[in-house]
Each structure stands twice: as structure tokens, then as C-alpha cells.
Length: 213
Image 1: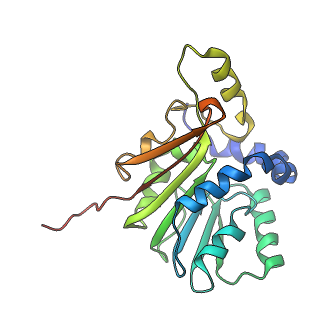
Image 2 (image 1 turned 120 degrees about the vertical axis):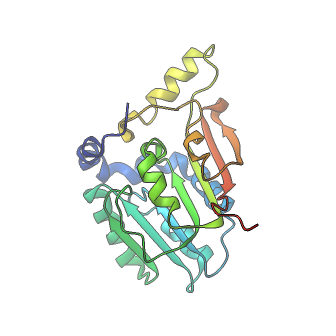
């Protein structure tokens, strides 16, 4: 089943107010994914499906005042909370776009790093990924965190994995390997699993689409 942006907007209209509280248990994996980006001061990082901006503070801390954080979020309600977070913190180098990542205008930026934290619908959307990587530098780091299923013989674990977070995604395609659609852009992707294999953090680097001879 393909991701359904309108369904996601409808769901997050109800989920936005409680999102930060519901995400607390994922905080260690969020930070692990951010650390996997190996950000340096001055880097330009894209936070895909940035939600309420929970990743902004650790990203800003790593890229410093000379770097940039660009968050793209589909849900207006989530985006409103992210905008409030930016204003409250006084960040001048955090840029927020509230629109579908598949069609977002990212032409102002060339990204050194891409974060996809619990962004399963984006991972299931080839147009969204194509737009992201059209504006990403060769060699850029990519980090992904999310939920996955395990071996089919472990049915109870898979039922639990599918139940976790079902409200936050509209597609359950590729749950056994959510990162597999990254292969055209990130051919070598290393994965670390948690929670008996039902959660993961992975990282890789964007290949050079036009290697020099």
C-alpha cells in the first residue's frame, strides 16, 4: 500500500498535541541516529518528516551557528509546533517547510546530511526519496531510525512491531527492511537493531551519481 499523504495529515491533526510525550521512549535511538550523521560545524542537514522539531536542538548543537538545519513536515499541526519550538529557542539557522517532501522546493540547499527518524512513509515513496537526494551532496551521510519486522517464524514479535506506530504511518510496505528503497542512492547501508530486532538505526553515505573517470 502506497503512503497516503492526506490520511497522514488527517491522523496527525489528532496526534500532534501528544506527539512529544509519545516519542520519549524513542529518544535514545533519535540521538543515536543523529550521532551517526557525524555532523561537523557548518554542515547543512535535512530533517525529513521533522514532526514537532524534536531533533532540532541536537542538530543545531552539532552544526553550530555556521551550519543550517532544514526541517520538512507534511502535517500543518506538527509544523505549527515545530515553528513554535524554533521561535522559542531563537534559532536563526533552522528553516522549516510545511509541505509534502515529494514536492518540496529544496533548490536553495545542498545537504551534507539527511536524517529520517521514524519516517516510514517517506521511505516507501520513491518520489519523496528522489527529491531528497536530488539536493544531497555525494558522500553525504544518511541516518535512519524506525521500526521493522523480524523473521516470519517470530509472528508474535511481528504483530507487536506492526502494531507499534501504526497510527504514525499510512503504509506498512517493506517493514522487514524499511531502508531498502535507499539502495539507488545509498548502496552501502549498515544497520544496528534493538528491541529484539523490531527497531533499528542505520547509516550510510550517498554515492556519487556521476563519478569522474
